Length: 339
Image (cartoon, rainbow, N blue to C red; front, side, top):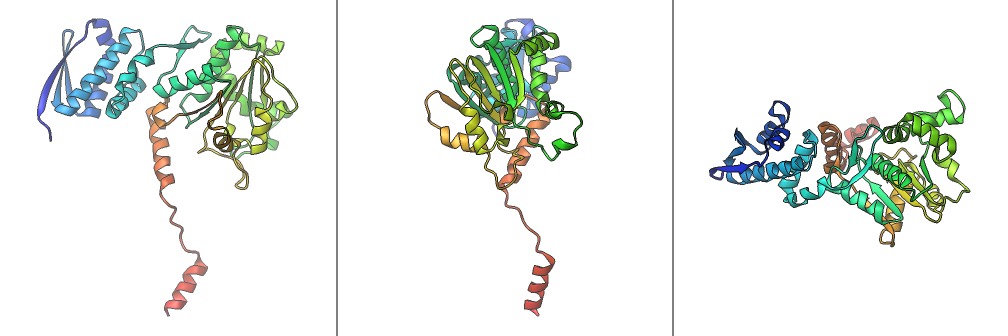
């Protein structure tokens, strides 16, 4: 074990210090627990004591948080966890980038920003490229940020329409049992897209644009035979497209349009004999100019801390080979051979 040291960090503004500490000092307690250090506040000074390497990491974490607080960023549990991860990986020099670009302002005036470095790369890829493929686990903001980018482009009039689509593949449910006509049946599958748009635009404005045809939320089957010009098109849950559906969708691209494809290759609901169109597209389109492939990871999860833990647990389980129990027949055969 390394020697115990004390480090002193000065915060220039008391307001920043208050933001970093959080209510009931919860943020600082989280750093103390994660890095096994003690943090004591004396005026605008912070005294950090602990094993040398950990004390230095705590200083870098606190410096990053103070820097974000000084730029008006909200310091919450997710931010603290993410910053500790960056410091542990030696990537804390990337913190300064996190407070920059506002993607979009919601109907309630809340700025939407990338909260992780991975999300920031994803947003930059969408700005720079005609086609962007965002692959990553649940909670990494793939869909939400894509919708924010679409609304921003629509407000700036760089596109005339927003088209949101996803394949109506059931995750263990059956469409036929749902009440109503086809639109009523597919609406539950499109709900997450509606929710994101309500958030950005407000329900009233969204309905107004939808009635005009400026915003369209539809199942993927409705895209066949169309050419989409001057549109921002998002294909969500793309892991559930077949190879043929993905090719059909990509060839809808028209002049002045932008396409974002999002999905999670660990949540494929297709029959076993079908190849996922998303997996296939990532392989086929890699290296083509003006197409970006962004891979988000569990480090980019911006939901509850437990979501990150669940994703990591499933990833670990997937790497272990399944131990199959012998069937009764195999067991009998083995027993008879022994006799």
